[in-house]
Length: 449
Image 1 (cartoon, rainbow, N blue to C red):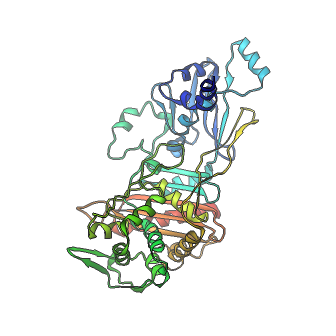
Image 2 (cartoon, rainbow, N blue to C red):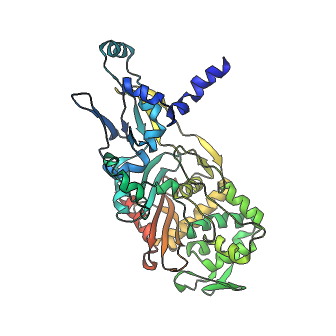
């Protein structure tokens, strides 16, 4: 009896949501699939019912929300929130008298409405800013974990998913069906230097006394690492090393670290670990061991090497820094209502895990503020809002080192953080290494202005 109660109360939703559970089809026989809306009530997905009773799933914003909302198709299945919230969308909490009347008259009940945390205006701004770039954008609330925008490009129109399925599914060059925000796996470039900085702080109580004289590069054995653009940064401390994104200094820092402790810091930040959230994601990897050579250590410390991460994961690390070290559980659904708007259930912010101490977060915040005020993200200084962040340029081609991914991670209103933003653009040439920070500025300008 205990198991039956557990199964029906606790596990029912996950079993019903399974694509292998044919009970879903039975739900659809008596319930019209409910709407998915943004936090302001804008309809993101709806079911249109023709006079003859034919039902068509419609996505008013077309490709703008394609990956996060996903699609629902009787032949192709479901993705995104259409899959995650399938149980709620095919459940009707309409007034019981209305349900009884519909049952006797042979009419379908209207499924519940899923009210997301997404903001259609912010999503559109991110979609427009990303333009023709391959890449992803994630925007979250710093203190709650609410995901306000999640864009991935190239994209697709879920209204035409069945008609274009063969083309979309065979396009290996662009992978339009891939949600790059959560399933993309990239070298983090210099955005990873916040992790290396934290590791150095933990291993050196006198980290504020760190100094390094940058001559534009560093050579150890047969390996030489240059600073971006051949820059010579001169005398630096830890803050200016991060602000200027000095590769030589961070390679030097990496060589000084205790590798097992470095690895522990990375894993404290959820590398090689499971991530919270409801959408499918790719686990990030940190591969340094005590047997790693100096070249690999130097490359890893500056964000290259074998380290791989998703934009989603970098957003979570940034959110924890902005929130005083505590990672809030990220979520996409604010509430579920019946079709008339009466609330069925409500999600509330909750802490997931403390990734660092409040003192460590405050210090990283200070260093990331310097990145904007005097470093590589200075294009975001002097705005109507304040920003702390970190840029990144990640080489991904062994044959053409000018081919890079461009990163920006950061948060706004530094004294009382509001928005967390992560942007990545794929395949920039060397002259466009700052593209991500520029796009972040466009998105934030649209939000605040």
